[in-house]
Image (cartoon, rainbow over all chains, first blue to last red; front, side, top):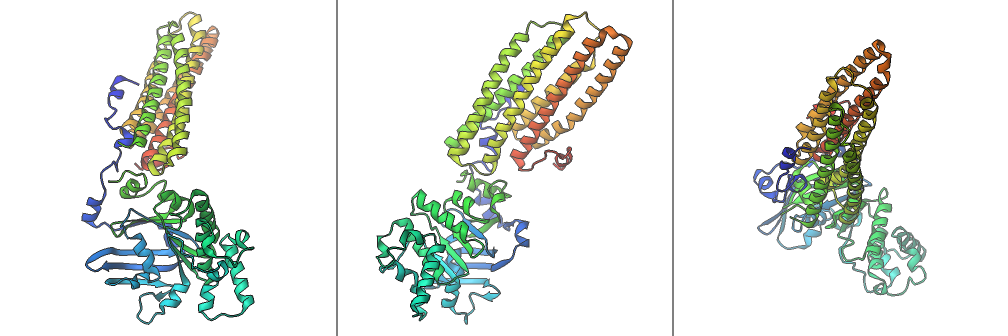
Length: 295
Length: 223
């Protein structure tokens, strides 16, 4: 190569100086309010949950801006984005957990299998049975492993011992916990390790026979081994359940999900197949965030 | 600049260095042939060692950065590209060695009529290498696309040289051995052009995420 070409090496060469560079991408997008980029592959999927021009306000603060997206049946969808981008708010809106917060106001629509979620006549308890939630911090009830799992059946009035036992075993097996706890089902759930407690919470959610599992940072408090087990579990749950997972860990989103939605400042920015979004994202904003050249 | 970005930049510079050396090897090899002077052949062999060493280093860095940084998007594309371009540049260096070896037969015999096309073909092939590396440094997809176009020019030169030398061989059977060596050298230069084209295709993939390999230049035209 000639000296002339060598001289043309920029001070911050290609890799470093490349757009998106290190400048925050928000200004342009926030100012222009560009529409999100939805990858065409999503159009051919079968969707169970539709979010349509959904806005959510905490008092005077708007947390979600005109979010429109559809969740694919039987697949794992990850919601990613920096803290405060609205991903957990969106997740919690899907089974109306935000109803429990004072001052929350929404506009727009959300529907599950064609039924409006925010209809004044919709049965919120039934909705939450169909769309079960697994939280960031495992929250086993202070009772036995067995009673934790069958809790939803008990409050639904189920009393048949055999039915309860069958459900407990099936749910614990589905949550990949059965072999570890089958000999101590009646000991306190609080004596389980952190990873086991989280899988117990997943078993408890599964026991209610949901169709959708909403997971809010389910592995953030777990060590790598427990995380790997929960991720493997998520992998096995796909097909039987529709999973929506919020995660700060982008590698986790890349590992476990089929589709990924990138959110920023309460807006959906880009939504598409995970293996495309993490290799050839369409928008510079997405590229900047996932490669860490953000802000 | 983040530490990871610095590491990527170092890797880029290493590839550029590798390409610079490989291209200079072609230059030295062809100049030795044209000027009928093989005294620089040893330099080509020494430089090949350096290119080989750099290829191993580039691959090692690319693997380690992939494992440790878990790159995505343009970063993972860059690291794959780095390793593949390292392979292409190493083969360009091998072609320089082949040119030196094939030149030996030509230079041992008395000079033939000057072969005008061969140095021009060498210039075009070298420029393709330079442009593909410049495209990488400047992230210039349009420049990378011109390299893909240049490949046809190199192929045309090869065909022209083949038929000229065939004529010479028919006219003078004593020129067969030298002519065959020159045909091999034209073939070596054509391979240099092929490798430069592959580098340019990798650069397009890195920058745009579009894989234009095996599209006979059609995909690159869409740039």
